[in-house]
Image (cartoon, rainbow, N blue to C red; front, side):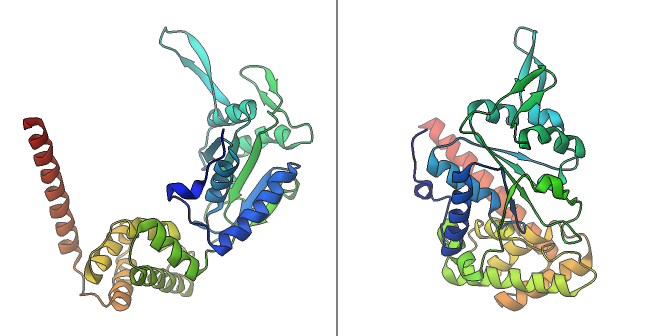
Length: 310
């Protein structure tokens, strides 16, 4: 693939901190001696760093999102019925990447089941081979193939993450990716979501206050339980008009996954305090959202009807 400028698409914002991480990742990838494991908190941009570098260097990018129930077939493939009713083997993402020289990221690797990790052993060894039992075939990686993995730190903060064995981790070159600094997060929000700098500052302030409350209270486990940087982008993309709307949109984005009344009330308090917004009533918030959605659908239908009539 030809070289492209990833920043031209507007999907990436390269801040000074991002440049430091990209430099470390590029040096590690250039050595091509080991797979690379990026460890850091959620929403710190680990996967995006690899995707950016792959685009920058003209490599095809793939990813597998791991979870407790990830099936090995997603990695290696399985037999499926084709259009003619014949069984054929459909290669999984890892097999495709190994054969064709793609760059692949195994996201949240420490959530993957043990059988998935065991299947990777041969590829991570010095021999660097991938055995596909269904095909009884051993594949030697394409010269351009690169394997990356990401993980959040294991422990109470990120539930369900296992501690990868030292022997397994020693097969990787590890790079630590920290939280995005507040000043850079404000810049990224401003450039990616096209919202006012004053709104960006308030969104980041809300996030930090919620994280402080999460860490200080035994009732809430993990500092990111209320909000992550990924949530900020969802919030910012709603293009709120005024601080009351900003607070209401923030509650709709963040409150939907909070299970207890205590958490939802704490979220309201923080939003009203920092954004200096009017007190919020949940019933009114969702009624207004439904009304806006209905109006948007009606406008869309009217536009489509007018287009057909023309």
